Amino acid sequence: MKPEFKFCPLCSSVLSKKRIDFKERPYCKECGWINYDNPLPVTVSIAINANNEVLITRRNLEPGLGEWAFPGGFIEVGETAWESCLRELKEETGVEGIVEELLGVYIQKTEEYGDLIVLGYRVKALSSDIIINDEVKEAKFIGWAELPNIPFSTHREMAKSFLKKTDEYQGTL
Image (cartoon, rainbow, N blue to C red; front, side, top):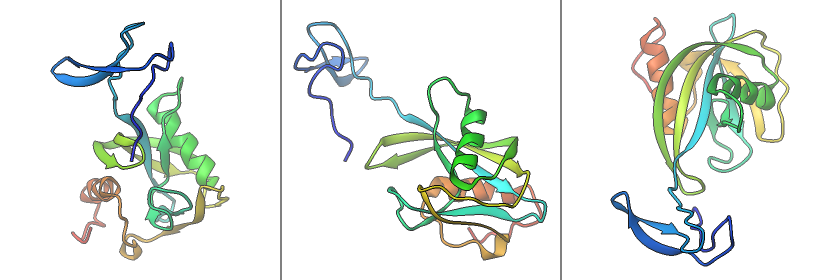
């Protein structure tokens, strides 16, 4: 469960609650800080190689430990969503790519981080050579017909969005 602030991150005073902008929010009486608790931005790539195979990863951390997913992660301060997408792809799998299209913007609810805003991109993989990092147990390019169960609804929606634009769609996701 995502922890709730009890103390002000700016001045360390105990937080109070107050109705602000039509919602009960923690705020600091001392310095005026308000916790708006905004969703965190995440990017995910549907990376396709020259053989029209998609890159999947088996996660080595929560959420979804041991489950299959598409490469992705949090947008860092100072980077664009495209930069985040390509950085996460390279960090997790060693694969470099080129963003070709925004597939969609989705909301994912998580216990660990609260709500996430997930930006899904179609990426052209520039190689099929994979070198995983410690966030990933396994990664591989596979044909769409071989796609395993992916527990993240946002990832399944991205795949559907991609497949509807190609002749690969069979309505199986």
